[in-house]
Length: 499
Image (cartoon, rainbow, N blue to C red):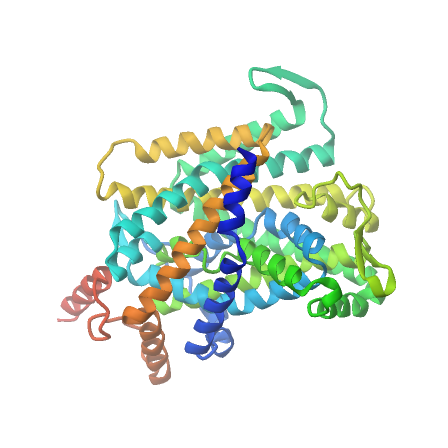
């Protein structure tokens, strides 16, 4: 089974997907005239436009929900893996894919807003919705929905929970072993698992509003605390900073470091972490209450910067500046690690080691706590994404209890993953994420060539912004955008109120 999963992963996550993600980012950057630079100040301003409603959440809450999915174990364990397998130069390529991916995030999130719907009193949207409406291909939309439910609702939650359990055990020790029907489980993992599923159940049974209120507080706090800790580590080792920066940039292009490996792992982990193009961000973006779709597209573009340029960079600098990995051998440039060969580079051990060298007795527990919040909020984002796609399917197949079944299955997956998981779960989750990325990036490129809705929305928003129009309005029919039914109806209601 493992060999089969690895073979499929080798196809799904081939170099074709790596360069598709980079190519799409460059393509949309050029066509939007590098919106991620031109409207950077506007992105910041929109973060604090705290507008919400009974049906929708605020832009900042949508950003927090989206970031809760982007900022996860990939920011701690994934960065270590990228450095371990691709060399320090992989960090540079993570920065590149984040910069280019910000434009892709703008496009997909704006599409999520344009084609959103009202479902049972709340906004819903995402790739399945805009693929069906903008492309007119319902089978393609269903394929995305099923891949997303499988990945975010069943497979990946267990993987995130396993990271929480492992980090807790590394920080606190295993304790006594409990004999259960699924095998021996350490008391640390059992207590951790029960705590996680209890908190998760309380929040997901409260709906998207409760998820948004929780993440808008936790996500900024945890990201800021993690970045501050990284700055402390860098400050203590400030003399090595120029050497580390030179190592990252130099290794990104030198043949001895393997440019292909650096690009491949940097882009793969960059896409995996910041999720630009994967199609996960548009789900939260569609839930936001905004005056114009482009506004939330800009906010979501900024979230890519936060994830990769800030949080992932924090991990990379901590690992490299403390020597958790060292480059030795002069001209050979070999990358060696200071932990045992049996330590999995995908684990948080390297980051914990890096902090322990600077703050003995504090580093490992701090990373465990940070990883708990990173992974837990990712679980919330996974649930919301899976629920949105179940709701999409429920529009056609009216099966009672689908959402409740999803909640129960996810809680079971999280509990099992926290106490014990199989390596195959990681592989299956990677397949699901890879399929989402393939389907979504190809989808948004096709949609662009069919009607350019995200680009039309950007031009319309910039024209209104230049003219000083307040409040902003969005008239899809006048822009030649079809099937944006929510915005058509909203405009009619607004005009009737004025009349």
